Length: 207
Image (cartoon, rainbow, N blue to C red):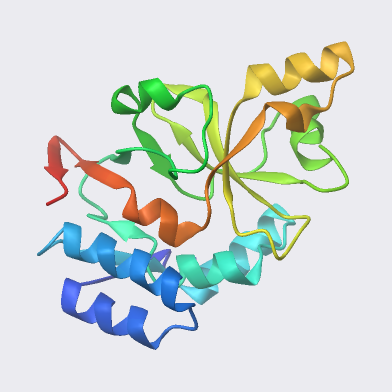
């Protein structure tokens, strides 16, 4: 089994971000995340792990998403259960959970397709424009999920939905994607909105 991730300090991760193939705006989001958690240990996923994961899950992750995971996947790894809380979604975007974000803790990982076949089909075959691959869930309430769109390589947005709402659309013949909401413009946008990180029994607030 390949190493899943590697851990580096804030100086090293900032150097890696500056060397990565990112747009200036995206790079700024990564660096802002690093600056808001000074002294933290950060991590990135290894290329061997990402290749192995894609083979096992029979999924092709977008290049932009692999660049994200292979550059800066998060902070405070291997310190117990790891989850993140956002101060808001992107200022121009929204979802029905906007008013509850201060209650919700998200894990950010390659959560993968649902094991339930009908649920997987609802997300994977949602529409001609979208195939929504889960990359995170709310702790203690896995129906609240985050996803990326596999169908459009130019779409770098992060989406949020409640799986029961998506399945309700399927049952009544509505478009499943009508209950799937873009909430961040990109991984860098997501990172800059992280307000606190819970690692083990410790909660670290952004400065």
